[in-house]
Picture 1 (cartoon, rainbow, N blue to C red):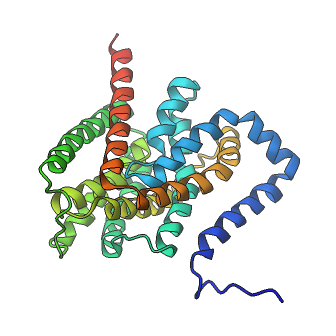
Picture 2 (picture 1 turned 60 degrees about the vertical axis):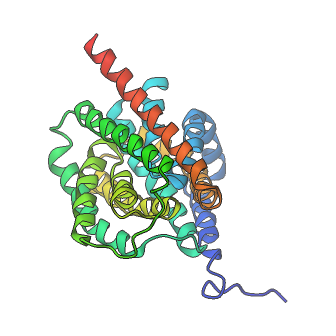
Length: 298
């Protein structure tokens, strides 16, 4: 006889079931032949998101940190299309990673998620509906890159003085988490990410929380922010174009595996390794922004 697996007694089945469901929809929604044909046609997007999803699930930087510069600089895709796609694909990948974190016992801060989303959700909605269209994306991205650069130097200083992992037991001033979440939500609507890294920075620098748990927390926050942001883009702003749809169909089967894998690896590696990987990504992101600025001024 076959044994029925109960999600209550074996919660690890939940992320697996989600991935299986996504694959079923992927195959049945297009038909197997069309699904494979589109995947091959958009192979460059799928390969890009193979790395982007791992970054999204395993670090405090969303998959857009990889996807956006590669799509705009190497693949020649319009920035507006790349931004909408980046936010949308994070909805799938980071949700898969979040389910892995929640149901596989990876440590995260539940209260922080709740307080941050109280700010991030209205923040991304306001940003997409009223701000993003009128604010220069490059100017915002430059400010965001400067923030990342300062944050990386601070992280390095804390790491080498051995002060970064001495956790504070309480969450004093929880309204601060909501405020930072709101600002991060505004940034997410403009550049495709922000709520995750900003709350992560607050947790590590202000609350002195452990690096890996702070990373897992930021992934869950960005998953929910991406879902709400994508709903705004597609339902309220009618932003789902045939090109974005083709990109999504090609990338979804990749990210629902890559992002949970990133979350799992993040939970297992040493904090120093995670820190090095995060700092490398920050340097890459700042480098792409600097390159874009130089091209604009020349």
